[in-house]
Amino acid sequence: MKVGILGCGAIANIITNFSQEGKLGVEIAFFYDRDMERAENLASQVDGRVVLNLEDMLDEVDLVIEAASPQAVEQMVPLILEKGRDVLIMSVGGLMNPQIRKNLESIAKKNNAKIHVPSGAIVGLDGMKAASIGKIQNATLITRKPPRSLGIETKEETILYQGKASAAVEKFPMNINVAATLSIAAGMEIEVQIIADPQVDRNMHEVRVVGDFGEFRTVTENVRCAINPKTSVMAAYSAIKLLNSLNENLQVGT
Image (cartoon, rainbow, N blue to C red):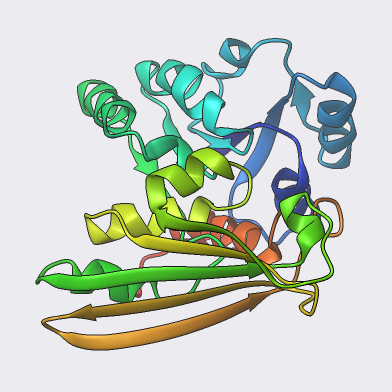
């Protein structure tokens, strides 16, 4: 399977490194980024090809990894799906708008393409998906990050946001993709609290879910990516695992 990458930042770097080491079950062949130097740096690691326009790779690939921005989900992912190419979306916040999500699903169905969303920087997503078969009474996410990861400076624990997932994604588009992923998996908007905490050195996500199945609680403490502290290494790992699973005969999990 040939794969192209849209957006050559921190996540693309980790995925490309795994490909370079022979640990990826697909071929990373094409790279596109508005910053040509970033795309060229990654392409050189795997003998890949840089394209000037996204459309230039679409006749050559089977799947495109979107790792750019929520805006790219709305503006560029439709082009990929219209070509009948599968897409793996990392900027899941771009799917929080129901109209955008339904439009992409419609285009994918019409062109026999698939939209893949990895679990990202959290554990417990399988549990959330299973719980959604019944009735979920309450689902909350408490995200705690070092202030720098949230783009602020503070010496005290500070609650930056408390409310619905859609507004959280709008206010922190590069930090809170997990809220969108959980909401889509749950089939409902979850409640979100975002805390800047100078006492922690990891990106932490606590998920609490209560439903007719019972209840569960998960805590994920993520190592931050050296290239971009807003990004958790686990997010890239989840994409790598999803890519590898596309070629696996044994599928584990929902």
